[in-house]
Image 1 (cartoon, rainbow, N blue to C red):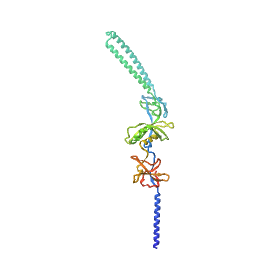
Image 2 (tube, helix red, strand yellow; image 1 turned 30 degrees about the vertical axis):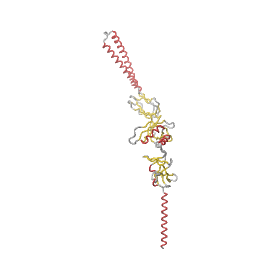
Image 3 (cartoon, helix red, strand yellow; image 1 turned 90 degrees about the horizontal axis):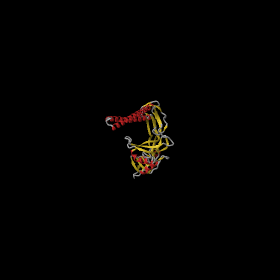
Image 4 (cartoon, one colour; image 1 turned 120 degrees about the horizontal axis):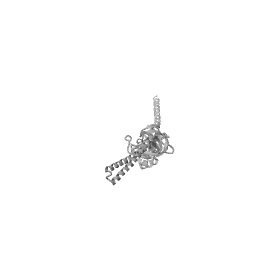
Length: 370
């Protein structure tokens, strides 16, 4: 009886151990969730996108320099205009009258000047031949009258020029080739001097301003020499070549970034409009040159993605997307900065684990977290 009980006990223990082993196998097959990143070339400026918004190279809210009634606006919003084209006109009648009056005053002033010159020359000749026939004070009076008449001519000429200018100011013309984007008044409205009438943008060339962190400003000069390109959200398939036009000299107090303005010509395939959003980056040539000059031949990853053995050899876990398993890869640790670790020994487009690397084992199943 005791023998039978002993056999049963031994069997129970064996079954129990078998069951435990089975559970352990299942547990090891459970996929461990991990965070990952896909490696891209280490190109700090060129490999990074900088968001921005398009603006016109020239933009102006145009206004008349005189007041009046708008009697003509020959353009509509969206019309393309050339330099010198008429955009709006005031009723010129009052300014024509003012000009005619100024011209009449000028003619009168010239006549008075002719008379004053004649009178002065006459008394001057008499005084020269017979000082007793004309007093010296009479000569002085005639000379003063001549000076006054001469000054009145100058004043009348200035009035004519002013009236001529005011008449010309009744026509508002485009200062450059561009497009009308807004009208602030309508025909027959009374307007004041310097009141905004029409907004015109020069869209032959487009500017694009981005904010560059202060730690990357040393790379701007090289990009300025070689170039950059912009991709707009509305035209993702097209890379528009651009160059740096100007670099801000003062950083934002809140973001510690500097404004860098790019400029580009309108591409033939599309039409870039002011206000369109997009992103800019350095050209591939500039990126390659930056990497070469700064010894940036590796990949930048989070510091937490690396680990080391007792001998000091650094590793990362490379994730195989086909089998969903990890394998340990030895890497060279080039540098560590506040932006992360730069490594070599891996290739572009490979996927590595970025968190929990000390809890992974060779060949372990993993589940990539979204």
